[in-house]
Every structure is written in structure tokens, then in C-alpha cells.
Image (cartoon, rainbow, N blue to C red):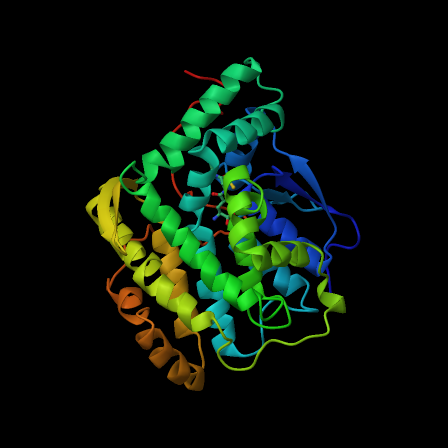
Length: 376
Ligand SMILES: N[C@@H](CCC(=O)N[C@@H](CS)C(=O)NCC(=O)O)C(=O)O
């Protein structure tokens, strides 16, 4: 049963944004009516900080006027209101796998996606023009100047300012290529990541792919050459409605997932642990070698400490027999040890407990004045 009636909700964001694209894919799959409205800077910042506690993209305004944020928690909330055609499989182990893959897609592939967009002149030209004339169209500065500021802001916040250097970006791109190879192998055999039916794992990966890798000029051309089945999947997901899908999720551990977990176990989970140490010691910047790649002066993220806690909570919530299957899988793929490495996590009191209606921290904190209304 839906409590939204038929009036559309408002999805406030940008039509080139990672998490706006993720939410759109989810809302379309579920056929939850929405209207995409471009956020307007600088005015929106004040509103979102008041309504939600942070300014991040996207936000949703429900027909009753309430604001929401955080794609993961919004989806969880919508699933309870729209339980028909769930995005999560009934098998608890598969649900856990979905949560792992979604989190990895959200938090690890963000940085390479931003790198491909903002490092290359073609990407930066396209995205800076788009944003300057979309979400900043009402900002009083001239377009050329807004574009310059945007390129600087995104690079210093999310690419060179988040650990990417001249020395490591080739290796970061190789990490992306390795992911594409894995996904290409799976998606050449089956329409969705867990089989014949889209799941939360597909929605998660819509984040890096839909509005980034399959849109920005440099990675799009690479995808065309190296991974056409991924491009087909991007379009298929966008054009699928859950109520008409005939197929089922593959039983057991779907093919391809084990190698994805191995990748996650040598990259993202050790990174999460390094981030925990940085937050614990109050080091807002930390240098760390992950999967053979040295990230220089990456930003710490309080939000991602909470993400790690969420993954643990999902594991703990599994019924005993699912734990019996999950533990050896996590161990053999290298995910188990880093998942539990740090005993107590340095969370703030009650951190993120108000989501999706109230956020405490942003994914990666960017301190900027560019998008503020009054510079003092
Ligand atoms: N965990 C959040 C992350 C949202 C997020 O970080 N969105 C980006 C844009 S796609 C953003 O708003 N960044 C904030 C900024 O650039 O200041 C979610 O799942 O919605």
C-alpha cells in the first residue's frame, strides 16, 4: 500500500548527478511518480540545511511537504511504503549481498567517477557548463566564472583533494577497468546483477554508471569499446518496471558476485578501516595504500564510519542459517577480517539516526563558500 496517493513527489537534484541518477532508477523501477526539479544554488543550501541538517543532492520533498535525504535510507523507507515488487530478494543472504554491493557502489566508485568527470578537460567542460547553466543558473556570477569555480571546487573536493594524484590515477583507472571486466562478464550472461530480476545491487551501481561512466565523454567511449553489455544494462535498468519483470533472482550466490566480493575485500573494506582510524585520531586527511594504490591526503568521512556500522548491522540481523553461509563466503573473499577489524567505531552520538529525514554528516565534507548565499 502506498501512502503517497498518486501525487508525484519532488526529486530535487541534477540530471547529471550520481545519487540523483540512482534515485531516479529506483523510482522508475517501482513506478513511484516523481518530478525531477533542478536544485537552485545558492538558495537551496539554506533550505536543505534547515530542513535536513546538511546540503546534499538529491533531496526528496514528499507530497506532505516533508524533506528527505540519503539515497540508501530513502530507498529503505520507500520499500516499507511500497512493498509490492520489492527491490530486495527474499533470501536473507542475497539481501545482505545487495547491501554490501550497494554500499560499495555508493562510496567507493564515487571517487573514480568524479576523477573521470573532472580530471579530463572534455569531462570538466561538459559537466561545468551543464551545472553552471542548470543548478547555478540563478547564481549571479558570469557563466565562464561559475565554470572555473566548479572545476576547482570539484577537483579540490573530490579528486586531487581526495587522494588522487598524478602518480596514482592510472592505477585508479585500472581499478575501474577491473570492475568493468567483472560486470561485463556477468551482464553478458544475464540481464541484471543477481539474475533475471533487478535488485538493490543494480540500483546501487546505477550511481556510478548511469550519470557518470555512461555519460561523461571519456569513460563512455571506453565503455563502448570495452564493455558494451554494461551499456546495455544501464539502458535496460532505466527502461525496466518491476511489475512487468518475469524473471527471478538466481538462487544461492549469483554468478559473478564472489569475484565482486573479492574486489571489495581488497579495496573498499580495508579503506573503510583506514577511514575509521583517521576519524578516531581526528586526522581529517590521511594517506593510505589500498590494493596497491597509494591515496595521498584523502579526506576522512564520518559518514562512512556509519556505513561500516550499517554493514555490520545487516550481518548481525541475519538469521542463524544465513550467517552460516555468509561467514565462509565473507572469509574466502577477504571481506570478513576488514569488516570487523576495528572493534569500536568512532560514531557520534546518535549519528544518522534521523535518516532519511535528518542527516548529521555528509559523505565527504567539502568546505566551500561557492554555493553559499552570503559569503561573510
Ligand atoms: N549518501 C548520500 C550521498 C549524496 C551525495 O553525496 N551527493 C552529492 C552529489 S551527487 C552531493 O550532494 N555532494 C555534496 C557536495 O558536493 O557538497 C546519498 O546516498 O544520497
